[in-house]
Image (cartoon, rainbow, N blue to C red; front, side):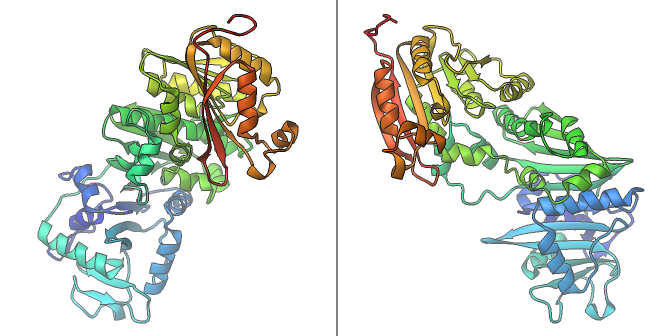
Length: 500
């Protein structure tokens, strides 16, 4: 995870001279954020010396360590070097530098180093006796030191000497600053293609990130900001949708999170400016204490917002291909929930198209309305359906989609009839439903109790409702949540009882 250190260390260490009084945690003024990211996977800086509320600073610092999975590596490095953990009265810079197929963490700090470790001149790297893979580098007069992986230290030292002096800038009140690129190893082009709709997906936007940054200033509370920068405006829209979707459940009044956490998340602001999406939040000490080492912190900072892995797992690209959508068409997402598929279908049909998101639960529809308003998604319409009627306009749909919801529909004959009436002649209808191979011959009620339904049952019910089944794939999702895909259509010629 980290490529920024080389340039930042050069701002501290130039030709074996260091200026700790002027050095700061902030990006060198004459180095763009893009250039810094190219040089390292990440850098984080923590300077609590001017922060009056040291306890609040330490708590947020600890949560960031946890969220970026740094707690254990830092503890190990400092323990091996015989050094104390950082506190609110110190200045600390952490860099994770990619080397081949691995990465090494380097810690740069200001403080006292045991003199026995440094009989050498500044700039010489020494292994720590008895440690496991920990080395130290003294910078300047010894008041600054670096500790961590030897290979990374050697690379950084060489780069610092070559690069010459870089002036640093100071942003008043910013005590925490970070800049990094999440590790996206293991996401192949084939994986991305499974997620793409019109060549775009959250999965792909995450791989195209220019940078991720965070910052915090402190007074009575902690003012925290977190920003991601994609390559263009379409990236920022996709990333903003994902960020809103990640946070919105915490804003629900029924959420069981502690009140201080709900207050922080409900007050969160998400803003889009060009290719940049920024989250701003205010944390009280009570909120940070309640949030302590919560997986939500790790998911936020690592950009594990849920949607990317789901896109690939559910083969969104293949689903949209079966719907055969083109720009300007109208499609319904029935049983939409909070709109995971709806917002992606909105991209498939474009601004001239229309997506009808149908559900019977007020809470999820409220979440979807908030999302559609915030982005905004002007081609998305939220509909409160009934158990036997999706309340769709008759004869208007080019396609309809149900994912993992058909088995929950108790009034399925009436529901299918209304869907068929809403479709144009030849309109496509795609259903993706989980099933259990060992119980596919069980009665329907027994399967539904397990939230499963066999594809042969679905096919029979579609045929009885007047649809033509044109494709069935029982291995569409063959993993532990095995699901089938069925593609049907409304006949071009009407031959049903009602003549619809």
